Image (cartoon, rainbow, N blue to C red; front, side, top):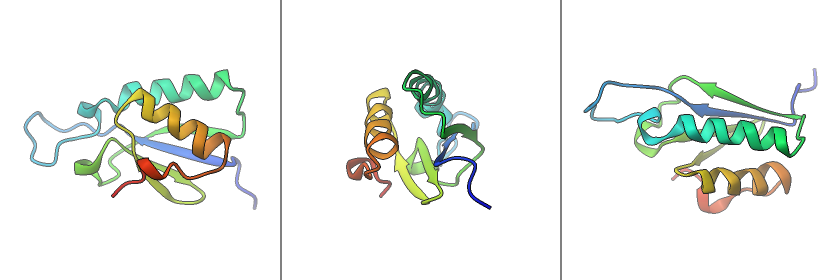
Length: 103
């Protein structure tokens, strides 16, 4: 069966209590990034791309964590600008946004 979407983007929205030693993506601004990326994909008319919130992706210290399937590419997206770079590079031009790859 062919995938339903060309790219399926998951953005961690996990929340932990304040002061948790691992932190959490939600406290690092992942909700704003999710909202922005959903809006931009719609504005750009990219109907074959799906943006979804995700529970914990277990990369808390490196977050906000984003993973794109079917390729399984992991990114750290800290700002709206990073989100736009990811959209333009990976989702529009089909090139990995190497500067944003999770390390």
